[in-house]
Image (tube, rainbow, N blue to C red):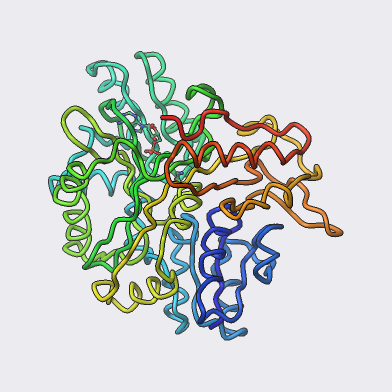
Length: 419
Ligand code: AMP
Ligand code: GLY
């Protein structure tokens, strides 16, 4: 089979790395990809949000399956366009992807179907939002409705911060159209866990749990990033919590989407907070997480292609999904200055030495290959994943591999995998 994966980050590298192990995969393509991906797939110079470009390429090159990995093309209806052109595509259609692309939609869905989440109000008028803020306890969370590169969530410790957040999102339109409406919600506390799940809209199979480290610096200090590292499985996610989530969150969510005429086929990502009142939904994503995919996929025993096809065909119930009884830790190596200003184009050294241990997988994100050398080409540059029998050993192995790698101004957290 000929498969095209849309996207260019570490998540896409992990999906391709796993697909490559399938005996039925003959040719892999990636649009637009990155330096590391070019070692296992043909790079196609088409942007990940270019719906028309991707559709034409897939048609002209007789691609058998397109995997749409990032949020924006899913929200823009890339899967719908591919299906209309008669091309098999993996991922939710536009109507189902709304569970991520509109926080207002997601919150209203949870309210209607009694799925546990933070209490909230929705506003499309900034004066009304300001009046409401005078009545709430702090901290409070202000969220832009639409996609905002993970930056549209502002935790406000007092009234002034909340009023400023409303102005920034709704009036200055810091996140563009995403800020036409906002959600103001109750602040929750507790450990955060990511649970990704395979679903064909009827059956849902949660993957091994994971945890992201979103802040830039050790001890969860500094700005929010796309994710500085992950671990799987989470130490907090017990069998009892899993059962509770299955009953109160996972099944009710896919049934709600079905009832609304928006059956969700693809990977549904539950961002959970384990509060004293039980697990609650922080957010939904309509795709694999990045860097969650870099720890979850290496623990999957099955052929990923078979799972993708079963989901598209509505036959997920026929597959027995199995996980390695191991743990994984992924440490992200970023450009100095990320998530703010950073330089690109520095040579990356030590990759071969770092990958000598067979329990290490290096996933590329912001890299490019030039004249046989890998150069930095983005904020998050690499994800170094280690597999071991438990989290502590995985962590040690990951950092041993990291110590082999260097590039100018390289920055990474030293505490991934501890919490
Ligand atoms: P989101 O993009 O909705 O996951 O929000 C980004 C981050 O903001 C989450 O990972 C949480 O750490 C935090 N967050 C979002 N909503 C809340 C909430 N209601 N209470 C506390 N923290 C929150
Ligand atoms: N790591 C969080 C996300 O992919 O949204």
